[in-house]
Image 1: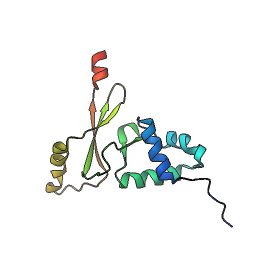
Image 2: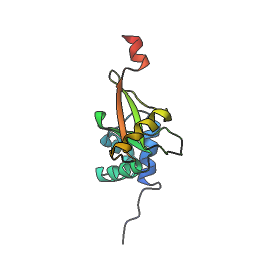
Image 3: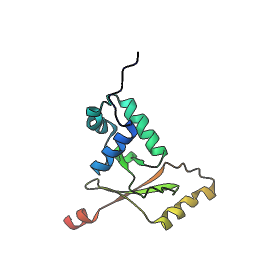
Length: 134
């Protein structure tokens, strides 16, 4: 007989809520440390949930930081790619919401460049807080 699950909420929901509450990017193992108290005990569960959330456009992977962040767009997530700004001093991550820029970049498809719905452009910047400190 299968054991009843300790999870009262789906792994995807727990992981998404963890990323939303944290506000800063987290590695998959940092996410695991935060959700282990809810019964998620193995990295594959975290990675499967992250993959599903990225497919839905709810989470972005930041390759430069090897971490993940919740998408902060409205629920109607329709653009073909995301543009994330990453401060090179403090690693603060922001998401660009200028749909004119995003739609212009999406025109890369006109050049037979295949973009997936998970396409993310990582733009290195110096955030306003770090710029003031310099």
